Structures are given as C-alpha cells and as structure tokens.
Length: 168
Image (cartoon, rainbow, N blue to C red; front, side):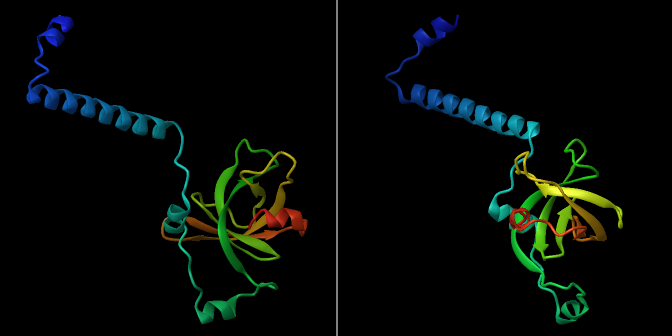
C-alpha cells in the first residue's frame, strides 16, 4: 500500500514537495528532540564555563567580612574545580562538590548536600587519576547559600604542592 501511495504522487506539483519537505523536517526534529531528552536522562549535563558562573556565583566580601577573616594565609578565587568528598579513600559514596576559593590552609567548597561540621573527610579532584592521593580535611563550617551549601574545609595536614595545584 505504501508503494501505491508513493507511485501515485505527482512530483511535478509544488504542493507534493512542500508536504514531503515538511514531513521529513518534522521527523528530523522529533529524532533530535528525542535523542536530546533521552540522552540527558541517562547522564547529568556537564557544566560549561558560562553555566558554571551562573551556578557558582562569585561573591566579593565586604570590608567587615575581610576583617573577620581569621585565616593565616589569604584566600584566593580561581576557576571552579570539581572535587569528590568521601568519608574514606574510596569513591563509592563520594559527594560531588566544586572548589570556590582556596588558601594554603584549606578550601571553600560548594556542594548540594549539607555535611556535618567537625566531620573529617577525604577529598580529591574528580578527574584525578588513581595515583593522585586523597587529601584529609575537616569541615569547619557549613553555610546555606542561595541554592547550595558552602563548606569551609581545613587541611588536616599540609598537602604536597603538586596536590594543591590540582585544586586550582
């Protein structure tokens, strides 16, 4: 029956071409939309640099906040680095976070989960190879921001300089 319909089309008429073009275009749009929706459901979308700036807003501390800052080394911002936080040195139950700022004594991290102040964790960059060591930290504070939790993590031992470079 499909062959009869195709053979009965008059390809000399412009209306036939409009219908065929519209049908093929709609089919292509449905395929692209379906692929986008289904592939997005299987894995989380990667944050592009422009999107990272929306998710992780930069805040300029007020002069009073700078005066209250008790750290022994200055805090510096840099590009966000994705890290894993785990109770032990295994990724099985790791929580994902983003380094917002860093100092010689610790890191400021954004995460979607509230974590217990005083808890000792291990962290490392999410894209690090197996040879990169986990760095032990203690959560010094956990503050609720607009749509995430901000952790202040203090290094329990000074990490090697090669390790700290990986945090930005």
